[in-house]
Length: 225
Image: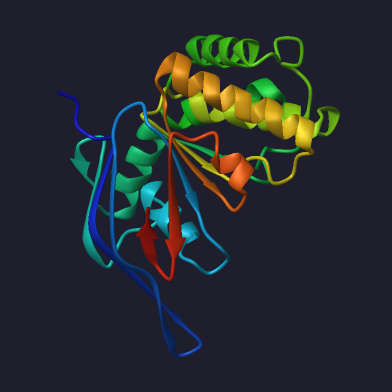
């Protein structure tokens, strides 16, 4: 039986802000099995961004434990976290975060460079992923030459090219119009239902969250639902 992709128990995270201690996470428990599509909703300040940072190995909890794909990553140092992050997690953000002066192909290849994948394999995997996402004729286009929806597809291709165990999507439709948002959500649906990709989606929109199989709410540093 496969280990959960995410197992989090009793996670706390506290920040100091202008001399005041802010309890961002208060004893969060979360279990996500392989192939699940989970949406986490919450207002600004609810703790959902802090939770995503820990899920993506961008930060570590003060208390509690977090297992990612069966590996306890709770007390790893920055270098070890970076290695796991690049290998096991794909990220998609609201603002795309593409390199402006770099082609779509080179943007998608970037995580494979950090993974020490050879040039030929990098090129083939990146081109194949862009082709799959409908951008086979846009390999050499720069972000400024692409629509918002196309830029988000490039960002998706970059997130998926390392074949991660987990895709974290942080407000992935936040900068897109309604029609383009539906297209991107359809791609996520296909990746989840067709490929069995495990997805955690952070959103404040109920319509976006409705695409997930399971919906949770972040409120005052705790998960509900």
